[in-house]
Image 1 (cartoon, rainbow over the protein chains, first blue to last red):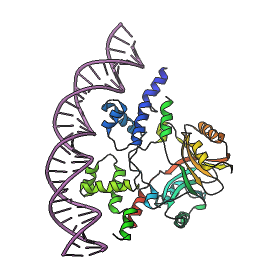
Image 2 (image 1 turned 135 degrees about the horizontal axis):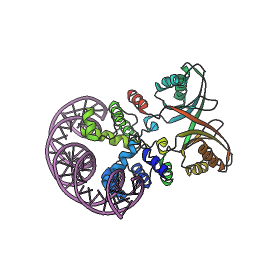
Image 3 (image 1 turned 90 degrees about the vertical axis):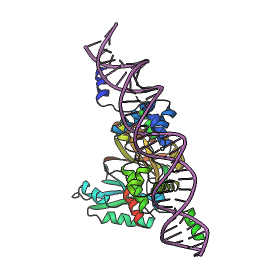
Image 4 (image 1 turned 45 degrees about the horizontal axis):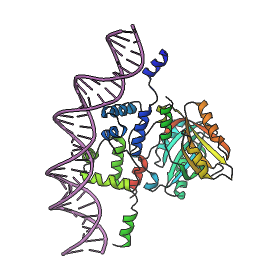
Length: 169
Length: 169
DNA sequence: ACACGGCTGGGCAACTTGCGCAGATCTTCC
DNA sequence: GGAAGATCTGCGCAAGTTGCCCAGCCGTGT
């Protein structure tokens, strides 16, 4: 009991129901301000402000940046490319190379027979080939396997996770 | 108005340099308002307002929702799971099942020997197994291949793409 | 020459933010 | 039992911002 409390105090992790409701509200209507939030949630303004500060301090909420839709920018093709690297080439080095290609939106090192998995977008299937060629042009890529996303069945989301995390405490 | 004008009005695509600078600025400091943007960009307030409205109308910027960091919520394990489905099961149906699992953050239908690719998070590797079991419990999954993300070499980003899109016009 | 769309710069009322502060709970600790 | 500490509430105030309107300027295309 005491140890548990100590843990909670030193490294408070997780969120409560109010945090979750706040995140949900902001997710639904991002443009509303702190005051409006407090009204909708039925708590004082200062409380909302404090919760928001803590959530961002603890990096649960990274930021409120604009979410850009690549498709609307003219890049409707999404593909996931698995890269197998030559042993000699470090992952960091490869990541730096990939970072120079704007169409590479994301890259992870992964377990399995592949070494890296990246998300790539392109304007057309033909241009996708071009982008992949640019990736392959990087020294150190031994093999690349590409799967094209045909439909986005579940768009990226975190709300269900947030709610679950709130329930768990 | 001619056909050309009409096309421009109905389906204006692409962005210009000012749009890109605006997105970049908001990406860097999301909390600043329209007025502050106009000062930093050296344009009139109304211009910023108009640009922002158009960008959101055209869905280039979907919203300004809070970006939740699963790791900070207690879910530091990320995995990509490829699902092979039995023919009889529709993708839509499978997506609905997956949508009920909070740890499934994203799902796409894809080309290749797999049928669906999803992004899954978990609190530990052990729990990841549990989540995957829940996925497999869904009727219709014939086989699942999992790769675990060891490191996020390039975190999800769109800025380079935005800049490229602006240069292209 | 003219209409049109986009940008500017100004003004105004209404609202929101950031901040501080006192009081009310509630939990934890001694 | 009671004190310390954290959290939430409700209030007020000055300063800043928003939403909205308008008149004028300028380049493009008709």
